[in-house]
Length: 339
Image 1 (cartoon, helix red, strand yellow):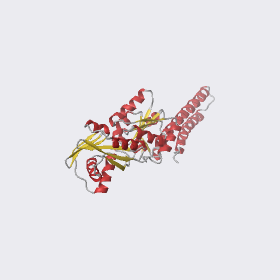
Image 2 (cartoon, one colour):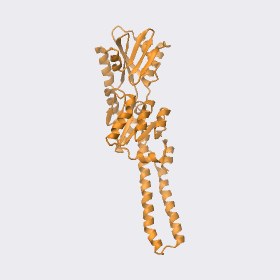
Image 3 (spheres, helix red, strand yellow):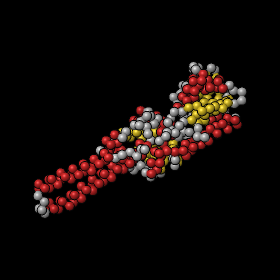
Image 4 (spheres, one colour):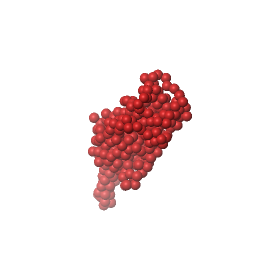
């Protein structure tokens, strides 16, 4: 009944044992992009070094980002296409996971991504670009550095939108006594800005995709029972590592396959519903066990003394089964707290 009611509410639970692990969770780790936020990035602005042409910078960086599938890269490429039309083809494209991309466009060797990636190529941000980066991240936006021909030349500012339901979802999780953790590859400043807006307790930022599972493992080593909520391919190892993996149904098939429970609607409030449903289910199981044992403890001695007619005993036994089924069916009245 518990898993069936979950399915009616858009919570696809892979097995009854998942409900058992769900009720023990005390920490919930939330991926930022696509989970707490919409994942729909857009270009909000760009800052150029002195003497750089805006259209040329947008064309070069948009071309190399167009070869990447990352939401941030696609936001820049989309803005470039909207403003300039057709983009040139990038050659020698290389994706540096969690850091950025590299490629050659119209004879210019481009590095686009984190400042640390540009520093690997001896491209360091001049003061005006460093100030632009700090200002963007202070506002909770994501900054992307770009350099070509051996020099850092631009900062692109990209921003995501927090889901309208995220603050309410975080509040519900905290009411359930859960410690909430925001996990992201974004900068510390950006992550803390988002966390402050939605009410998350802790932030773990600047984490490479391959290291997300290690973060979950460390929390488990501290004695915590960890749930992980994510939606992307990069989240799948962490979803598999967690005691309970919850996938956003609007995310990738890989994440859904690696999870224990899928929130079909993509609404983060479903995580709170799943935990409340599991706790209610366990209380029902305990109630059924208590009354079944109490029933037998009382009536078996009565039957042994001969004071209970076999026909009445059979009817009483059938009634106990009906009681257990009826008590379980009360779970069908479980309601979501989504407003």
